[in-house]
View (cartoon, rainbow, N blue to C red):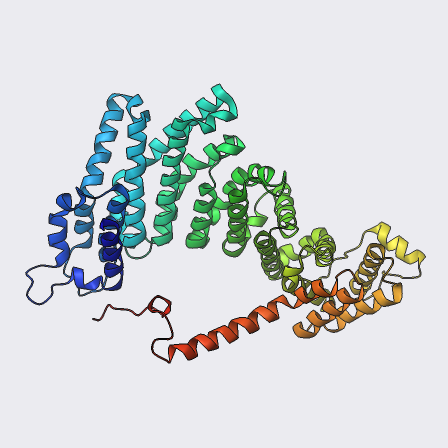
Length: 516
């Protein structure tokens, strides 16, 4: 009953939070004031998870920042957090007197519980939570550092099996809560309480000092994937304000994480997903940083993207293809780096895309393959690529066949046509002759400006080389069939909405109750 009551209370506050922070008819003060006065008595009878829900519900009321509210939100937040803050102060005071006290099992559990409460409050309250974060930000980071040191010491003494010890697992749990809280706050930080620029200048340097070294020096099984989530969120929300820090971040987390996830296709699935999400955010929001790092790390980024779109997990493969497509578009807008990038990577990337296009394991990514190949053939045809894509050895081999690239205004088109033709002939010697291969490549150049025609051209080619069974060929139409099904389902749902009683209440679109 208490679970249902807390969940219902949270739903009510999320729907009509304004009613709790404004004076209603017949009231002397807003309801939230009365609620906060009775807070100790209310939470005394709640279980831990129920208390978290209750705190989130009250914080949801405080997220309303409309001009006609009748409370001081910062003061109300301070009242709400009185009990957790008192427990936190007690822990810190005990740790100052006796450092080992914060390492006891009960203390670690209490740290995790207090942090979990703060995470729920922060997620609901929004940027007004900055007043609360200021109270214990550095204490929290110091505890994170202390637990990291103790975990590393346990691993040094007992090896990898130390990560399975109960105390180490508890400390790692507390560290995860720290990372979740920081992630949640950065996600919600906004004007006027804590604008992104202020987050980047006042919080990010301290956060990176504590977490990057810890992440780098840890053994694989002790690295927390939440670090990657925190970095992704920081880049996504702070954007250009994170630019000065991104090279340092890449050098700290990139190589060690890549070595973890590329040993096979199964280990560290959470790190794998969060790593490519991090790379995607860097590409979208701090693209310039990619060309501020060393050439070695630039090569690692391209290798990581290629490895991603060759992965057998569809989500990872699609993320890799999306990263590459966005990367190529952004490179094309930067003349100072574009030609060098094309010289180093364009041909090898085309070869890798053709490899996954024809390998029968990545049929669900067909539309992404089409978009990438169309873009590549387009920039070559319109001469956005001015650098020579061939090596001297390749030019000499073509010259022996009577194909001269020197002084040829369409040399890159000629070279790419020959290169792809030879590549396909070598890959499918039984079902593809030179005439058929050249027709296919020429057709790609001819229809590169028409997305629908380009896609159909690729489909016809894949079916003609007989690498797919008729059943497998149907998967090349996956996107169209899914879009058609979604449109049909939506039209049916909208028609059912018009008839009372046909749609269950929980399936109906939720309506805002703020004006009730």
